[in-house]
Length: 303
Image (cartoon, rainbow, N blue to C red; front, side, top):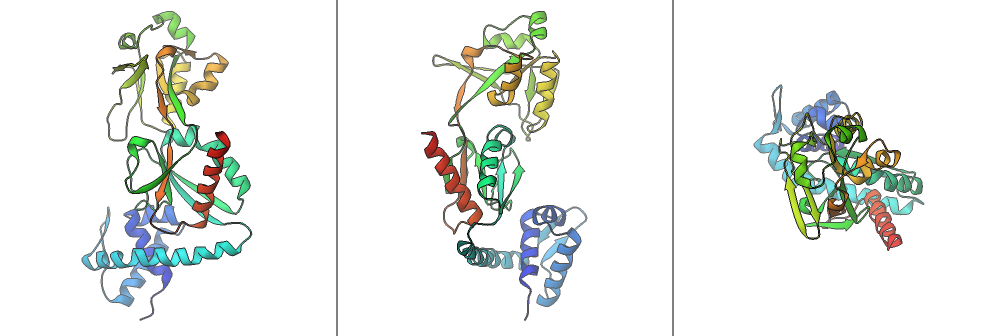
């Protein structure tokens, strides 16, 4: 029975992504092309592999059994093909990273720029996602997360600054009207521009000074989800609407220009920088291996 490798890969990508549209975005193949490949595979095998509705796609019992055997086999085939990269002067291919919004904004830019200059035959795709995900199931080669959100059974190496901190700031015009907080609890009487997790949870604002930790749950006129929406909060703060509490790197240009004024600076809390993590039990694709080595060399240079 002749079965095309690409049809098997299409079936696996659809099941990993949970649908044809998401698989099309991840693979670069059209949704109609993926659908045709799966139908062709089902016809050749003589069994239905996917249950399809207008809203979802789920593997049948036969599909699940095929996935169990197909995933490791395809991974081995991809690894075997990737070995050919060793015979090239430079590694090539695509590196897909799953990263939170803060990392995409303040940690990755200088690293990615330098890496792509050093490896022009590698392409990086970034999936910005703040929720906890299985990077392999999401179709990614590796992820970047902070220590408390790392997946288990993964190799993790430091990436980017090893110490970061949150900064609290507001426009001078706002502070002139409403006063300058002297203690974190003073924020409870101020308009605060807050972020919200994708789950809907509201993270408290945490401060620390000389071993004393203060957590406050302020209110305000604006609530944003992680990602580019944080720029909306920053712009609202610049416009005098209230107080922001974000990565220092995110607001530093505005502090330096003077459009935002730092407040409660002795209370700004430090936290450990992020980690690049990836599965350690399998052969690393050449783009990921190059990126891991590049990050390790960068870490050594910073010591």
